[in-house]
Every structure is written in structure tokens, then in C-alpha cells.
Image (tube, rainbow over all chains, first blue to last red; front, side, top):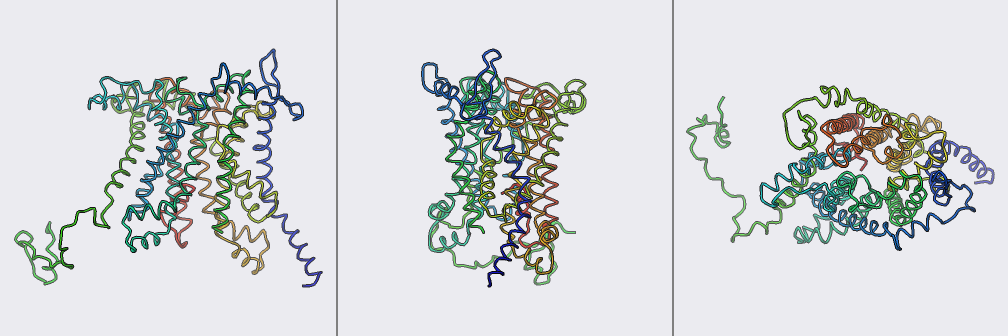
Length: 309
Length: 328
């Protein structure tokens, strides 16, 4: 290849590249203005000042003039004399941990059964497994509100079988109800991930295991489980991340201060002008706290797509 | 016609038998010698997994029965959400004050949901598809970092994203203000990653050979995209449109933070605002049932159309269509 050829090839390549740039450009501009800039706005509010008269936040757009006032305020909410965010944060982590583990324990066997044993009924089971994914979250919460009323079906059934003496006020700030709501709300997303992952496992490996004398349980422990470790991790991330930022489940199923989660704090701070800068700071801190799992997820999917190629 | 069919051996012999007086069938010799000793059922390696199957059924009942009850109560002929008082459609149509059709708030919520879903789908899908096509070939640091930003926007908790959007429209782009425009802009950004991720995955699996073949046959780059690549991407584009539409119907956090007055609140926000702290009445169930209906109509239409689009393709199946529409 002569030098001229090479030059022509490069020119050619650069000439054609504008097509791809032009295709990607609207999306890039959109993401810049409506995804990256908004986070700068949050920083400007969190690092900004407070209008003393109107009690409203004043954004400061120059990073050199940012102050840490709202961050220190948030810090004092976490630890200190009148710390109220600290316990709420711990409660959020406990709720999310219990709810996500429960979801996994429920979702995994169901997804495993449908991928491995449903046979000709696979499509039928899959449709039923996916159905909740298409049913709005609010609808699913509303369904439990109906059932858990003091005179609702759950109380009536429990009284009838004499498990409880008199109706329980399930919606009056019970941790159990909120955790149930979180499990019920986010399990469809987990099931989808688990199903897709388990379905991709090469059946021949399992058959080989059985042929070599492993029984069903040991095939599962030695082959399926190790092969689905990545799926489990991704699935947990995809449920844990939104659960941490959830405020509506708690608000609908309990509405009580005693079950407040970190999302409720941010939501209520947004609704009060004088606390908006603290809300901004708190949501940024939450973002930093969740950064590691989020980055893990992004790089994991990136690697998976490369492997598929 | 006889009710019971004659036994197979009788038919094979060509004997006309009376189904009633056929007598007991001759014993069938076993294919394999019977096992020497009795084995408990759990030793059978190919037994049906009864425990797993019943667990799955229990899970399905637990996940779907409450919805069925909620849908049922939307037809309740009374104000209760927990006691059945007879069937009626008063909460959809009949009730002059509180039915979806007559109550201005409920009615505008239905319209707002549809409006947001249509606008968001129409804007997000073309931008996302074009973004995927561009990013797939344009290998530079810029494209890689925006790919990263796009996937990041997919995993970020919705509340954190919503807070950022809230401040964008209340502090920086104050000329837009909270309302329908802000909601659409927020929803497009939030759902942008669906078409981008799905189309990108499809592009990776298609590979370059088709486009190169088109180029060899004399197509220009744009012609190759328009006549070869886009038709091949059509099922993926379509599946992502269904996903975007349905996720906007279901969306809550973004619209909750970006809606202002009651007439910019879609159904999910109305349900939320009227349930916490008590009984909102069956009209809310009716509203939720409408949401369910919207999603299901779109999803089922999507499934049928997806099957039609991928007909004749290798590996096309109902299972494949279902997983694709769910973005798996």
C-alpha cells in the first residue's frame, strides 16, 4: 500500500465518520442538556446560599463560590444532637436488605422452575411471570391497600383461622407491611433478570452433570448456581438501587414517621423551599453512596455486550 | 357415535367391539423388567419437581390475586374498597360526581397519561435509535463516554434523577417551569436508554456483514442504513417503543416531581395523592384498571406485531417475542 493509498483511506474514513456523528448527535445533545446539566444544577443548589427573607435557595453557578453549608447541615442531621437522618438511613438499609434477600429467595426458585422444568408450558408460565412487570406500581400498591384494610380480606381470613384475635391495623405504620410492599413492588424486575440469565445457561452442561452421576440438587449446587452468580448480582443491583430511592411505597402503605425511609426525607425536603438545598445535598450524598454499585453494573453490562460480540 | 373409543389392540385386529362389553384389556407386558426392589420416589432422578412447581404456583397466586381483587373492586357498587356490594360500572361511567368519565380531575388524569405516553414515545424512540446506530460505529472517546452516560441514566435511582430534573426546571430553565413540557422532557430523558440499549444489542448481534454486502452492491452508506439496517432493526425499535409507552404509563417519580397543578397530574400521581392515609374509594381502582388496560392493550398489540415482523426469521418464537417485548 503506497502512502497515497493510505492517505486516501484515512480521508475516506474521516469523510464517512460524520454520518455516525450526525446520528449520535441528537442523543448526545439531549443527554448533555437534560442529564448532565441537571446534576450541575443540583450542585449549584447544594453549594448555593439561602435567601434569608424568602427562605428559598439561591443557586450559585460559579464552583469557586460554592459553600459547604448544606453539606454540614446534612452531616449534622446524620450524627449529632438532633440527628434524625442517621436512624432513617440505617432503617432504609435494613429494609432494603431484608426486602432484596426475600425477593431473591422468592424469585429464584420460580424463575428456575420455569426455565428448567416448565417444558411445553414455558410460554404460559413466562406470560404469568412477566404480567406484573406490565402492571403499574401504583396499581399493585393499591391492590394491597384494599386487601390490608382493617376490614379487608387479609384481616378477615386471619381472624377466621384464629391466627389473630382481632383485626390488625396493617396500614398504620408497620415495618412488615412496608417490607412486603417493597418485595411485591420490585420482584417483577428481579424475576425478569433472573429468568433471562437462567434461560441462557447451556442445558448441555446440566445434562452432562446428570450423565456423570450428579443428582438434581448437586447439579444445581455445582453447575446452575455458580453459572448464575453474575445474574444474581445484576438482579440484586437492579432491585436494590431503586429500593433505596423509594418513597412512595412507604408513603402509601404506612405514611407514618416510624417507617420513614431516606427517600421520604428527600421528598419532604423538596416540598419545603427552605430545605431544598439540604435535599439537593442529601440526594448528591446518596448518589455518591450508590456510585460503586452503579459503576459496577455499568461496566458489567459493557463487558457482557463485548463478550456477546 | 360411541362415547368411549374401542381399545387400540381391538382396532388393530379390526374387530368391531361394543364399547360397553369390551371387557378388561389384556395386560400389557412391561417394556423393562420391574426393579428388583422398591425405590422411594425421591430416588427417581427424573421425578417431577413437585415442591418447586407448587412454590411457583403459590408465587403466581400471591403476585396476581391481589391485582384481580383490585380490578374486581373497581366494579363495586358501593364506596368500599374492601367489601363487595354488587357489580356496577358506576365508577367508570355512571356516578355523576366521582366516575372517571364525569370527574374532571380523574378524566384529565387519563388524558394526561395518554398525552405523556404518546409524546414521550414519539420523541424518545427516534433519538434513542439514532444514538444507538451512531454510537455503535463511531469509536472515539466521546462516543464511549456518552454510551457510559446513557447506561448510567438507566441504573440511577429515579428519585435522584427526579431531584436533578426538579432543580433544572425550577432554578435553571425557569422559562419552562413545571408542567407538561417539563414532564415530557424528563420522561424522554428517563426512558431514552430503553431504545438505545435494545437497538445497540440488536446491532451487535446483526454485525456488519449485511451493510457491507449492501455497499458491495452499490448502496451508499445512507442507503444501506435506510434500506438494510433499519428494516432489520424494526422489531427491536418496535419492542422498545412498546416498552417506553408502557413505562411512561407506569411512571410515577418523574411525573410526581415535575407536575405542577392538578391538570398536569397523570393517573399514577392522582392514585398516589388520594390513597395515602386512607380509603380513596373504588374510583381509584377504576383509574388503576384503566392504566392496566392501557399497558396491556399496548403490550398485546406489540406482541402480535412483533410476531408478525419476525415471521420467517430463524429462532422466531412466541417465547422470543415475549422476552423481547419485556426488554430482556
